Length: 193
Image (tube, rainbow, N blue to C red; front, side, top):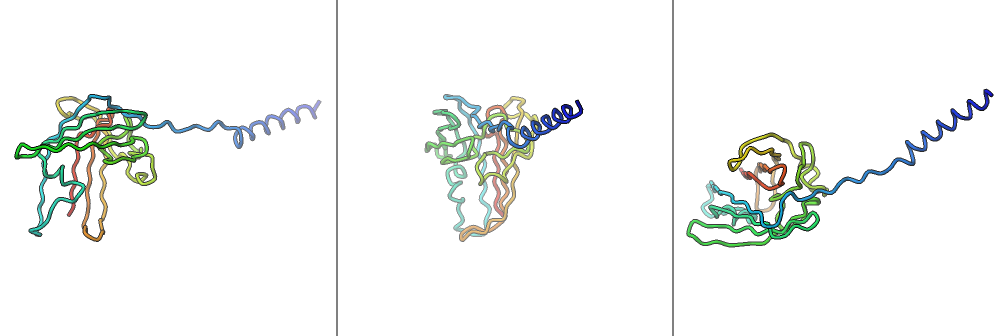
């Protein structure tokens, strides 16, 4: 009788160890999804300043269209899985405009122009995208604020980095704020000193 009790206890111990070390179900991270739909659009007032002692200084290449425009419209063209295809129309002070089409995968961060959109419903502490190059770019703020006349829950990324490239030297400060539910940019600020 004593032997049977030890056998049952040993069997339970082995079953517990097998569960802990070998038979735990693997939990797959849920992929990030877009919060926007086809046809949605966003307008942004653009204020850009180029303050330099170099008379030939221009906006960094990635910011030329944004920096020289006074208004930018973003229109969602296609949403497929975690990909968003959209058009950005840059309006200039002289009345002209230029439209460019971009895409972004809100899960990995791959695309032609990233950070305009992130996944919907991300929270503080999460990386903005899942790929390795974005692992240190995590959402560091989450709060409620009024943007475009609506009280919205927002998430933000504040990032500082030293830039030491061949043609660009200085300290870069980047601030992105997104609508948490939509994953769409509400505010963007870039400064290079």
